[in-house]
Image 1: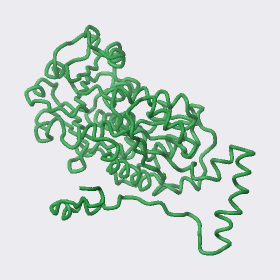
Image 2 (image 1 turned 60 degrees about the vertical axis):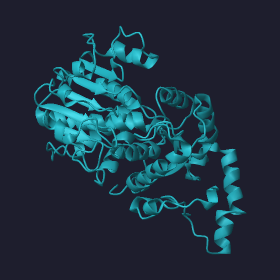
Image 3 (image 1 turned 30 degrees about the horizontal axis):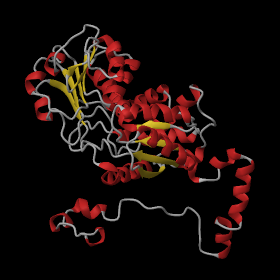
Image 4 (image 1 turned 135 degrees about the vertical axis):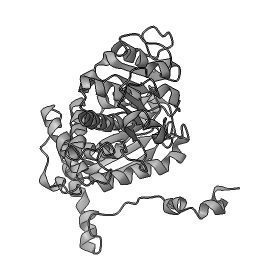
Length: 411
């Protein structure tokens, strides 16, 4: 059967999800009028030639007279899409379109989904660098570990626009915000927390680094991968996991997730693998469980509540949704507003603090983070990120008031 003669299964054709996705979820529309000869002469030839010549003479004008000041590329190779795995670039496109419309809805940021038909590290880097002049930032998405670490590191070093791997840092930012509010609600201190992270992929690595930077004692952090606890004596560690082993689990605990959870105050699941209820029984009283795998949490919330005072997931149909949409629209909004050259650790920590502060006066065990639909979030994150960029010396201009207005509720 040819592509053009393909017919959707009748059951799928009646599914509202498929109805919504027909012909995609986004489009491009002009921002200027095109209803007359004068309009055409200004927007295209001959008027456009004057702008081109001006940019050729003074390249810095590029940011003010093209869409790049407000446009991000959402780039994937389809190798680690949601919890679906390596499904390839075509099957990844609906997710990338979804990401793009979230950028627009919550941050006023235009974005274009780019699904690359290569999973070669050098090929991805070359492709992104080649198209970078068309964008003001690069949001890497759903690229599997450990390749994602090298891809982000090299692109960040070689480009002068923000490069942000959302599966790492977006997840880490929102997790930090949630844990900050959870510990406040329970009267705990970051420095005293015993934390277990289930999963040593992109999100697990970034969460570990972010929590330690925020004040969690690395000695009291234990990370588990599919082979068990990561410790310095394990012979099978990748370079990334060896770095984790050097900064965590100072007691040298070994075994699997059950051994890791003995006495733990916090469990953060970013692995996609189920965790037996018996393992949870070893956690300290009044624990915190963030089971973030999507669409199926590592621990069903009903089970987690037996052992934890506060439970969060990545799903919208349970309380305390730890979702990257709380972070990335505002992070890029703030970075673009000040034309940041990169996104620093300080900007990420500022974003987490801003997210947490939105609901700091309204904390409940079932409301430790704002709703993704809360209109206060993106403006607060954007402002905090822009200010942090200035402090960190990566801002190339102050934010302008008209750009703040791009954010719902901004001022």
